[in-house]
Image (cartoon, rainbow, N blue to C red; front, side, top):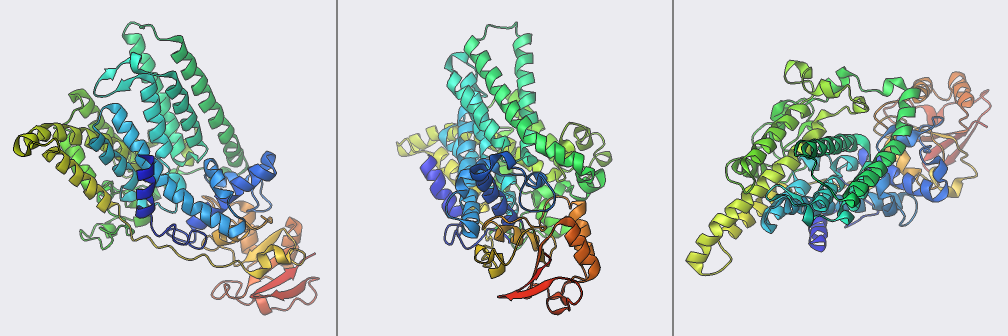
Length: 555
């Protein structure tokens, strides 16, 4: 199963592995940031784990690795090679692995809950290749749902639970419980973008389980199960707390990093966003229904889980192997997750829905409610798995009567559903080539270009590429991109608009910046267009040309 999932992932994400050290999926902004994040995690753990969260970007700020989700859990994938090539390879390997893990996790969860192999396969494909995931391809932390699915499947297996057959403790196994908590903890190390919601879901499931146990007369539970859950839950909480501490320190140092209600409203999608296919989809690229222009921010509001998945889930509300109460519960869960994902755009501006969650610890760090589509997709996939399983059972007998073979109409219907799900997941994803780093930013010129550095131009669209270039040695740089702009970076960008002049040079020296690298081929049309040839008389700085870069030494 794992081998098939990985092979399909390679095909579905192609050409990610055609030039894995030279191209990035989707774009050179967020994907470049992902490359820096992956490579920094591996570099810091190997060289100085005590300063893991003090990334080299956003100088002179500390804890800059915690300005965004870290992707720390994928650090082994960033150990191959060095510099930009290693970071680029890590992004592509992670991108492929994410789809494989999601398909295996979706299959395992549906299978444990009681779906047939074909029904579980449809669920696995739906969770891995839902169309909305294509628009989020550059946000590896958002589409990293495999750990969630695997953890839920393992915990259900360990406790002997399935929707179809109920709770059967004798079929449980403590080892699966421990494995489930370990995978859940690993998921948290990828980031809180979806990890925070996952933590609350796990906490809610634990409370429900304890409540049902109490209500049903506190039936005896094996001590090993209690111990495994307590120890595993404690480990999960410990990892979550250790990961949360630097983020809490960042918010304390930068209160403006908190997501205000106005910002949440800007990123809140309308309900029709769940019918909008992304531009990166092969099937929905041309937007035949004309829905993409109807949402304010298509890049974040193309939330289509798949029309095939929606149809199968709708069938699953009526025809399913799941008990009726579970079908109703899953259907309500789908509706609730969709309403919550709309943030402040429905029901009194979200006052009685999403904004109720806004008061939970950590929730004010989430600015994109639409990413709750992760849970909509999981619930839809479970409903679809129940439908495909039931249809398979009902039609398999018909097929045997007609053909005399075990392979019946149910298998054909299920196979067709799986194919349609995969077709909706096909992409026309761009894979732009990563520009080679300027000679001035390579270790060859380390003696001439002394950090800390400021690379110009500096703006949110170009800084991620600078961050990626610095993975060859990780010199401290002012440049950086995250969900917020630190006050120091904002000041430096504003005050250096006329660099080189006395005010900008004095400011940079005050911050400890020793070198400014101006990229002649990049500054056209920016405030720094005249910087390469500007006079430095009387400023006490020197100018050197290295390739296409003009290097100003402030020392």
